[in-house]
Amino acid sequence: MTKTEKKYRVFALAYVSNGFNATEAAKTAGYSEKTAESQASRLLKNVKVLEFIDEEMKTVSQRMQDDAKKVYKLLWSRILDCGVKLAESNEAKKGLTALNAEMASLRLKDVPLAEHVDNLDDELERMMFQTTNEAAARREEIEYEMTEYNNSRRAIKAKMKYVEALMSNFYLNYLSNVEYEKYARLQSDLLQDLFDRSGYKDISVLNNRRIEAQVSKAESEAAIFENRAGKIAINDAEKAQVNDLIAIGNKIIGIESGADDATE
Image (cartoon, rainbow, N blue to C red; front, top):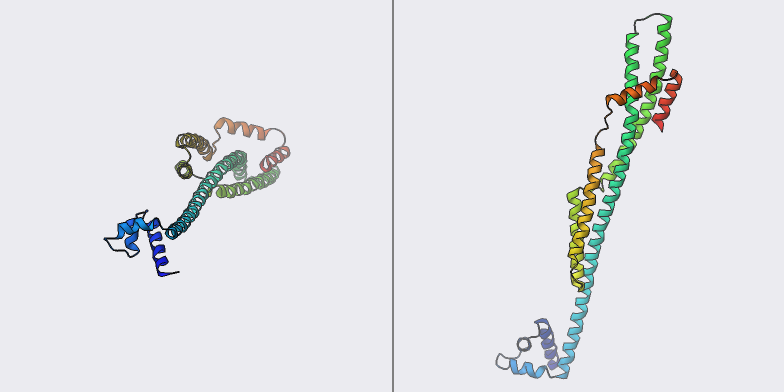
């Protein structure tokens, strides 16, 4: 490349880089302050200069396309990340709701068993100093019943621990209402940015409606979940009914029924 051609290339690069200011590009290429404007006009008519400018424009265009692809890829990746977070949170809420229902069922089974064990323990304590054969036989029956009921309770407790472990895993992906809305808004903003860069019309109104619906649903599910999350209390009428059922039939049938209920 000749010295003149090198000067042409410098002019072409400066012309494209500075926003197509030919006079300033001529100065950058080494032309004097006085002649820069006239030289710029002449250079823009030079075939070789125009070829260099075309090359630079193609380079800039390719660079812009590459940068745009990187931006689109980054935006889409973040949009997908938000979607995954929201989807995982929805699944976690479903799982927690189901597990809370199961935990409530286990507590319902454990409470009457615990009360029956306490009653048997009280009866055993009252008979501690009785020396009749009948008292001795009854103590054996009580000890047998307590063993059966305690075994049933241990099975229930083991299952409750297992359910708690599953709940802990779901809590890792559970988002509070504030966090859920944050990710939903971020996803919407990223989508809007992507659409704006792609030249599509404004979709913010539709996105806001979609987000409001998602957040409303999340709040509703959270309210249900929080109501179920507390301990399940059994009122006196239910306790009496359970105790009456336990007392029906002979002791062996009663014990087996309690064990079966506890291990379902």
